[in-house]
Length: 237
Ligand code: GRF
Image 1 (cartoon, rainbow, N blue to C red):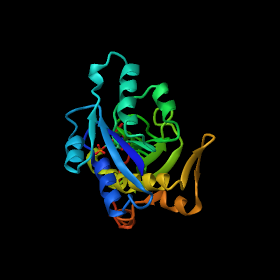
Image 2: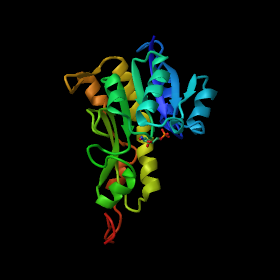
Image 3: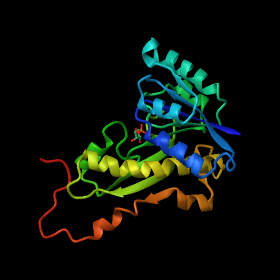
Image 4: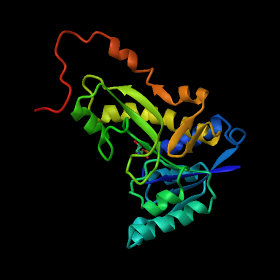
């Protein structure tokens, strides 16, 4: 059985989406995988409670107990390696990782980021998107490299930015798609239909279609007439 380790810092809704998909799609049969452990750097992460309720093994590696980033990353690796993972999924993990850590898991470490990378790396991505006045926004699952939010893109989901959106409404629309996108990417990776080779992301033909999601539930709203008044996108002057 292939082991998946999920690393979180907070709410854990993406973790929950993974847990649900693993049950619904019977990942224990195909791709023969199981979420073997959940690791958090915060002992008060709500996602930890949820994971425990789901019967998963959890470990806390509190970053505040370590003097250096390096010492923390080495302890984090010990916790992760205990499950001998095929894939390590950063799902709302809020720490920057050292080159040592990233290289240790090269090709089997992925992250979900709430923007269409390479646009809007870093924090406050929905605020950045609204400020830039873009018409579409979304989420990206990517391999983790030393460049923050910079590794090879595995999958993306696109949502419209609608008139009247604020950070909260836009974040909710993106999060909905994250919950579809991440389980799909994880399953395809474990099925080896997506692979990392020589610095490139190789995707088999049938997987390619599954890795580009459009928000079919809200895109039609973009076509509805909205009246004659002008709509202001972008940051106020
Ligand atoms: C998500 O928006 C994810 O893209 C980002 O952090 C957030 C985590 O949310 N990296 P949750 O903890 O999975 O609910």
